[in-house]
Each structure stands twice: as structure tokens, then as C-alpha cells.
Length: 420
Image (cartoon, rainbow, N blue to C red; front, side, top):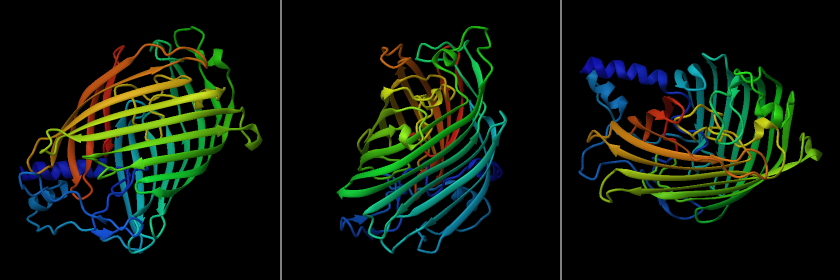
């Protein structure tokens, strides 16, 4: 058994991609007990004991036990001095297949009572010859009144498209290739309590765009929409969010809601003028109420309000900021002018010490094809998942999910942290 734990530890260490302190732009949970200078409220660690009083453990505790090492209680040691972590990793998704990753993060505080600021970066190369360098930042001011969120990316990204709308058939695969540069920077200010509002600048540049046409010889929706070797979307965003979750990585209660209005205008370098709206609402319930099991609900809507974005700027499955929508389908499987998405997931404990957990999930989505057209068929997906607790303080787990969609779509999804 000890050998099994050790082998599991080595495998998971390789799978730990970029985030222990931050996952995909999510707020970082604070283990240290302190008083928030802005709200004067005490913030505490949310993971100590289970409702039955069983001490909680994580993967590193099991590895330490296997080597007869004593473990000290986890504590938050992050100060104004940056904490740097670099780790090699492997991962797997339907769109990338096997991926080799070198990732790192920097965590620090800008003041003694500030939330943890993070800089997360990685570089990866995949079995499908995709190369990417994403960098994500979340910088908190000393008194937590301001939060500066950045998202910067470079992709060399061969990826197929399958047409517009949720009726798009998998046989209409059109292999594409392109380069992609992103620069997003948003400044949020606390308005009151858990409510923030902000303004940002966003820039997306898809260039060197090529396609091979539908493999079945039919005319592709990309050709009908309008081919282009380059599309630029540049403009401002106006955003607001409310966040009452007890933990941004793995919530057990509370909720999150955000609204973002985006403009792309020619005056700022955009290929065309267009505007979009994103709505993201999440709610978490303990179910049963006296357990650690959680029912999580998510609604994500992404709508082009007017104008004609470049084809690759259209709403698309798994192209939300966190690449989390549509488990069960390959990234980019459905694309269109409007996207409405819903998901429910039930998360439950398997082992009393919290190391092993499981989930079952189901999601659905409906997309329109072009601007002004109706929403098409609802496309469902579902599946089970396994969780291995990586960090008991932050409640970070390694996620293994297997999703099943329609038209034979299915596959394994490995990630750090929950999907939402």
C-alpha cells in the first residue's frame, strides 16, 4: 500500500500543472486567519475537520506517511517576499491529447492583511503540435480595495472546427491552424461587501489563419461565414462581479455572479465593430446540509449583441476564460453567435479523510449559427469523475473526469481544481 501511495504521488506530481495557489484566474483561498482591512471581517481557513471530526489529509500527507515522516499542520507562510514554484507536468484533453508542460507561479502579499497576489505562467507542447504560453496575474492592493486581473497568451494552435450552431455535425470537420496573441488587463474596485466593478482593455489577434476545408468535401461554414487570414478584436470591457464563495478553488457554499460587456471597435484596431455580453452565475449548496457533499450549479451565457466578429472570436465551447465549458466535447466543437450553457455537478466524499472524492456531472448547451438566427438543438453531455486531494488547506484536487457527449463524442479530462 505504501508503494502504491508513493507511485500515485509521483504520477500526481507530474500532473500538477500550473496552480497550487491559483487556478485559472480564480480567487485564492486564504489559510491564514486575519482581518480584512476593507470589510473588518475575520477570514479563516475553511478546511480543518470533516463534520464527523475526522482529521483531513491530502496526497502529501500520504506520501510523508509512506516514508515515515511527520507532517506539520499546514499554514499560510506567504508574505511580501515572493514564493516561487516551478514544476514539470503532463496533462490530457480531447483537443490536445498528451501535453508536456513546464509551469511556475509566484505568490506574494502587497501588505500584511492583503489577499494573496499571484503570477502564473506555463509553456506547453502537445501531441497535436500545439504550442502555448499563457500568463495569468491577480494582484491585490494592500487594503484589498483593488484587484488587477491580467490574461496574456501566445498560441500556435492547430485545431479543427465543425461549423456553426449546435446542430453542427461532427462529420463536417475542418482542420484549421493559426497563431493567437491575447492581452487582457482589468482593474476591479470593491464597491461594497463582496461586490466589485471594473473596467479593462482587451486585445485578441488571430493571424496566419489557414484551413483545409471540410474533410468530407462539403463547403465549410467557415468559408460561408467569410474566410480571413487575420482577425483583430480590440476594445474595452465593463465588468462587475459578486463573490460570496467560501473558497474560490473548491467552494462548498455561497455563490458567484459576473456580468461583462465587451466592445471591439475599428478605431482601436479591430477588424470590425462588434459588442458582446457574458453572464456567469454559480451557486453551491451542501447536500445533505450536514455533510461535505456539494451540489454545484452553473449558468454561462455568451452573446454577440451586434456586429460580425472574426470566426475565431465567436462564442465557442471550452473557449470561455477558464476553458471549462462542455466536458464531453472537444474544444471548439460548437460555435455560434449566441451560446447558452448550463451545468450541474454533485461532489461527494469517498474517503473519510478527504483524500479521495468523486463527482457526477451533466451539462447542456445551445448555440445559434449566425447573427439573428434562432438557437439550435440542445446538446447534452454527462460523466463521472474522481478527485485526489492535493492540498487540504486550499482544498485543491487533481480532477479526472470522463465525459460522454452526442455523436460518439467522449474523452478524458485532467485538470487541477474543479471545473467551476
